[in-house]
Structures are given as C-alpha cells and as structure tokens.
Amino acid sequence: QVTLRESGPALVKPTQTLTLTCTFSGFSLSTPGMCVSWIRQPPGKALEWLARIDWDDAKYYSPSLRTRLSISKDTSKNQVVLTMTNMDPVDTGTYYCARIHVVGAPTVGFGYWGQGSLVTVSS
Amino acid sequence: QSALTQPPSVSGSPGQSVTISCTGTSSDVGGYNRVSWYQQPPGTAPKLMIYEVTSRPSGVPDRFSGSKSGNTASLTISGLQAEDEADYYCSSYTSSSTYVFGTGTKVTVL
Image (cartoon, rainbow over all chains, first blue to last red; front, side, top):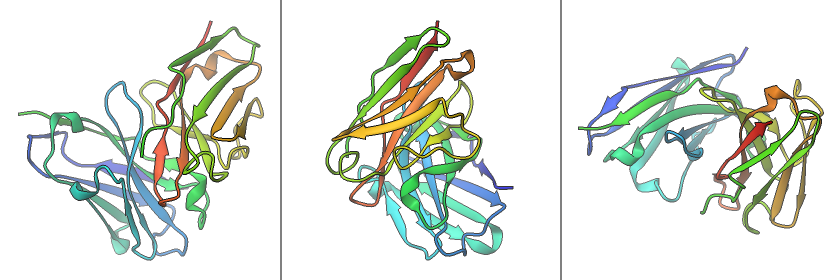
C-alpha cells in the first residue's frame, strides 16, 4: 500500500526558509522510473506544481519558483525534502507531496497524494 | 508557464451530464496526450480521475470520461451524482518536463 505523509512547520516568518519532508512507504525512490513531486495550494485557490525528483536524482522545478526551491531525497529513509527560501505571506497554503501514477511514466499524472501540510507565513 | 484555463463553475441536476473544459497551448495540452484530471472534495487531497486524456485509473466510475481537441481538453461527468460535487482540476505535462495545473472548476449538483 502506497502512502505519503508531509511534515514540517505550521508557521514560518517572512524571509525565513521553509523545509518540508515527505515520508513515504509502499515504494522505493531507488526503483527505476520512480518520481515524487511537491504541489501546493493556497487557501481557496488552485493547485500549483513546484518540483519533482526522480529515482536517478534528476530534478525539475517550476520556472517561476526555480530560484527559491531545492528538492532532495534520502532513499534509505524513504524521504523527499523540499526547501523554499525567502518565504512570503503569499506562500501560505497546503503543501502536498505526490507520487506518479505509473512507474516510468512521469507524464501520466499523480496517482498517490499525501494528506497535505498547511503552512502559514506570518510575522 | 501560465495556468490552464477552466470555467470557474458548472452545475447540473442529478442524472444530467456536465462538461468541464481546460484550455492551454501547443506547449502543453495541445502538444501531447498528457492531460490528467483530479477531483478534490472540500478539505481533502486531490484524486486522479483521468490520465493521458482518456484513461481511467482502477476504481474510477466510467461516468467520468475525457477527451481533447486541439489545445482544449474536456472532462465529462455523465449521470451526475451528489457525490460528484467537488472541485476539479486539469493538469498537463509540458514540453519543458514540468507540470501545469488548471484554474479549477467547482461542480455543483443542484
């Protein structure tokens, strides 16, 4: 059974760096073709894709947030970590990690999601 | 990359059909058959309903169907049920190996 769970601070101050951890089970990020992404959703607004990391450590970022994001993995701990620098109140929202639906096919979308982690940016 | 364009809301009575459009560009929706659709009831994580334009994951009712013409993809819900009331988002893989989501559509069952 595939499960993902996000963890991290519920509150960060403006200009601080956010670090979120996605801990998963039921699959391995060392499996060829495996990918995990981070996606966020401001309150009452649409989903926004942030970043993706692949089994071979290939990394992809949203063009609009590329300079602020970093994604990494710890295969031994079954974790993916996202850091976002220079946080602003507009970054407030729920942050999800998600796994691709079909291994080896990153184009087909996200078939498994965590429950989300709500992050509020406020002084 | 700009968000894909969806209508803010659609509604229908139980048993009716509703269709949600999702308009992008030749760099995303129009370029490849890489469109997926997600259902998100309030307070829950999104759920994959359609992938590669027309394919349904196991367990998704066949009342949900997808299609595409040019730069516009569509999700149709036939035989609308009360449990279908939710927000729906389209998404496309892009030519830059990134993903873009739609603006979201609220489906209301009257």
